Amino acid sequence: MVNRNNYLVAKVYLEYLDSVQQLDACSIGRYWCYLKYLLIWADEALLSTAADVRPTFAVYLTTTRLDGESGQLAPSTLKKVIQTVKRFFQWLKMNYPSEYRKLPPAWIDTLRTPRGAQTVVDHQFITVEEVQCLAHLTIADDDLALRRDRAAAILLFLSGIRAGAFSTLPIDAVDLPNRTIRQWTSLGVETKNDKSATTYLLDLPELLAVVQDWDDLIRAQLPPTAMWYTPVISQWGEQTLSSDAPGANRAIAVNKRIRNLFKVAGMKYQSPHKFRHGHAVYSLQHAKTMADYKAVSMNLMHQDIRVTDSIYAPLASNEVQQRISGLTSAPAVPTAPAGEMAAFINTLSKGQRSEALMAIAQLMTQA
Image (cartoon, rainbow, N blue to C red; front, side, top):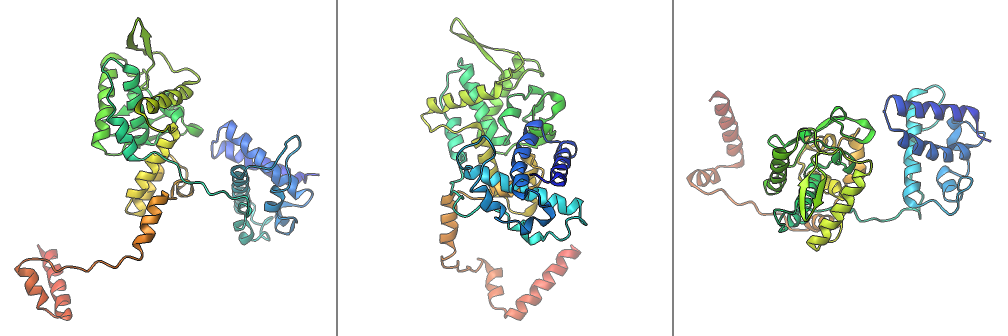
């Protein structure tokens, strides 16, 4: 029997996700399904004593299912249940310190996917080289649908925007000269958890030129409130642009059209979300400082940089191989700078060079 106090505090947590974190109803329903596993596992024991319950929660998940379900949980579902429960316990420790003071933080840290249930998945994303191949695809000027789809694919990569938000993006929300996208719900953009933010495009001129070509075309024919990924109407062999509002399944339509684009290009299909992955991986691989890393996270509209790290930090396997191989390479031998000044510096002792550097730095501050 589920402990009543456990049930009530779980409901309070769901209310927190709704009112404070502002998650959508679908996400909250999913988290409630995950928390049910925890409540049933704890049975009549208080969650504050969870560290003493046996079998452990991880072991329990590998041996049981909720009523009406069959088969074992998929590794991906196991991982999501564990992550949800871990965040729940961290929230309990923070908001109910006296009730949960005896629950060791170290025990919460041990919550992880059980051994044997973990799967090795190669990180899937589209590369900038693949997007460049799409950019070079030859398309007839009167094939508006395919021109739109190519521009859409490239903008998905440059922006890292989710397909749902992209499919509801009005022309007015796109500012290519300043490389910005206004993902604002006030403009009708349907973002995850109804967040609003101004995000930015990668500065890749070759790709931006293709997007700009489509942007110029639609701005000349459609009002600012029309969709950037506008419907294309075919009639009597001629294609025209439409200012109609997007349908309820517009994101699915984007997915189908991107699939067709890959088919025309003779390339392996990658879903719109793989373009978001590609944007993130490309950005993180070029990040040089922690500030860059934070900027990438904010541009993806992640609530926390830890979300970015957990999803996108893994590098492509070939890059890992290159970096590991580089660890055993002989260090580069520094070469002396050329010129008369370099020749003079080489005549100085180590101490004299230090004095020279200090003198130069002092002179620079006086300049």
